[in-house]
Length: 446
Image (cartoon, rainbow, N blue to C red):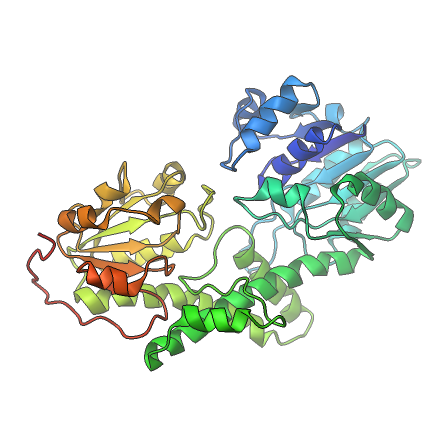
């Protein structure tokens, strides 16, 4: 059993702390937000992540997991100290290291010799050196420590599985012995371990996310071409993905990527590259295509309905992906704001994200079920592909709608089946566009 301290309890920090406790280690999590701390101490998770709260409660009962706002409690006895604080996007697109610097200062004040500080937050290349300098400045002159970069690759909605069954563990350090000690901490996970220098480890995280975002933007570019030429992007992606050199992952056309990682990491990498005198034109194209995907989705609603002034639009799904309540950079926000700007009224439903969405979208009406969203709607938009949306009663929905228009932003439904049911249906890159309806159409859903 090792003594571990985790600074910050966001998605990465809380998952890291809970999972290491579940592996039998003694874990102290530091959280300075007192409201959040109170929630954690009561055994509740401030985030929605399948299975996380149950594991948190179990390890708290076992005495392996505790929460505090006091660095003096968590730092001195810790052999491994994980920095997992947020690195939000600054106004210029770079990563804001305010919280990382604050954590490093506080760690330095209470640090004892022999500890390893593990930077798990997504940080710009060179941050490991910065953290080392800040800690050294605030620690005692005889305190010896090492800094290791250990970028995270957790996916929201499957964070527990990703922690216990990772594709790889990436560790970067100046002192290889320190990296090997951190490697031993992860040994029970049975994953390949890649040990590099600090800056290379930091770059691996950004390069990985930028590449995945590029795949998404690439298939959305192909989807736009498919729509113009009458091809089906889903079949195109299936044919591409069967090639072992390409593979099927992240080739699902839709309304673009969102969340806490891809948007800010691609922009941060762009900023790093530009600041270093590079010309990151591919990264710029990735971001442009992602933004355009949302604009084209709204344009489809206009193409079918004509003017959106006074139209009632229903939105299914708000979180940036299923199985999370995370609304950060969610495509739904841009789409809904664009609809509202064009004079539409919007009501929406999401299985878990509505409490967070209410703070961001105060003029939207939120409903109790997916079927309530359909009532009197001129169009129904699928934005997040939650499982419960896969088997809806479309006969019932059609009766409820003022006009049976479905714009599917995730290609969740079969175009032929939807049209056979009497819907005016439009997916992403699925061939021909539907014929626009009349501005004052009758309720053809009855």
